[in-house]
Length: 325
Image (cartoon, rainbow, N blue to C red; front, side, top):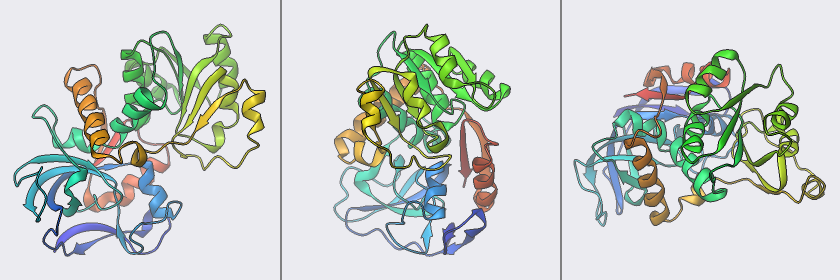
């Protein structure tokens, strides 16, 4: 039996239950991992609330990213061996001292990447990798708007977009978060609670608007985000921190300038092992080089997962939050 945080019924942070669970030996194609750290992400709250259905039903162990040491290998798992340091993104199961994982979902960590760094960036960092390198390929000179620029994804995205040569504009909720975003690569910050972010984007870009808007906020920033995008530009909705974007008349994309709009997820971009490894390796490279740093600004023990979720949902956090096991 090992310690874990399970959800027996969907609801608020109070449904996260700290308890002991059994972890069997790994089956064919599986590995067993002793987790050292687990990332805390908004997607964890979506599963907890039932916004995203659990693929295993109820109860389920929460958590979607983590890092640890391989302690057992099942039949047929050839790429991974006992003792390997690995990071992973996987639907559910990382809020636990030990877990099983399909071997083809594990990525070996270079010596330069710590367990805590990996747990803070396997989901967030690989999300930024596909957003900036594949969904819309950010180029030098692009005007890029990043909502929630001081959040876990936002701080990584600001650094990486800056590294790629973009003019980085970030929306934030406070002066403290604005300062943090600027320290992490944002050239301009907009206090969205006090300022009209559309008007500010027009002012900052001299009326040229943005090639792309990256929006992990959702309901409260739509459809205004479309007014920040130049004709033929792209709206990328990758999260729903304020609630989901509701159904809209697709003709609005035509009236706003023949815009493109997409709702991508890492699961699809990393579905093939080749894509998983390529994305992870590019992420490890920019982090190891120092071009992108992974700010871990909150650490909690596993038994304090409820507090971690409350802090995240109340916008009390910046950068990455992790559970240390």
